[in-house]
Length: 209
View 1 (cartoon, rainbow, N blue to C red):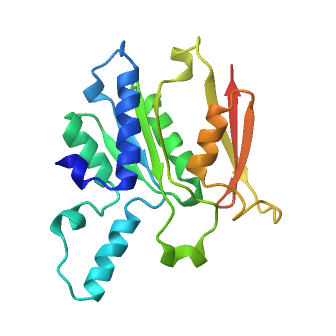
View 2: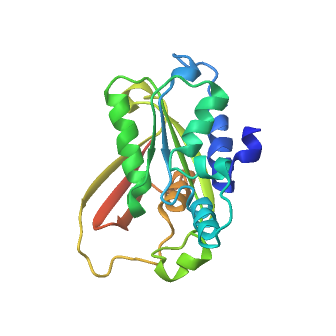
């Protein structure tokens, strides 16, 4: 029943979240207690647009669609399906959504969480928003089961820094959306660093092997 109610973006998020949790067989805590951070710039925008169009046409709204149009809908579905007891939050922060979600996850690790599940999923906005697009967007979803670097010294680790930028030459619409750009960097083991310009900031991603 939950699967049928889940949107395309929700399926991207939950498929990868399940895979990330299942990939670790020797967790030091129960998987159901791991805090989760769901990150999506647009979330369930397509579902919200459908509801608004139904309102404009004076047609009845779907109660199920309405309840799942909120930004933390997929976090809620994951919590229900998995019986998760850990802290859960949903983040949207413009072009820097992924970076802010990573900062939030690192904050949870600094507070003592042994692991944090970061779930990122997004899709292009509905067509009526095309004139306002500010980057190249494609459907994309991935999840990381994160651990503090000093607890996983044998594995490669990532770090993230930022500074302000007002560089007029900084790429705008020509750059890929954050979810896709960060995933591409993460998968390219030959690349030790990436710089992303977003929301007036220069984000420095670095890989440490």
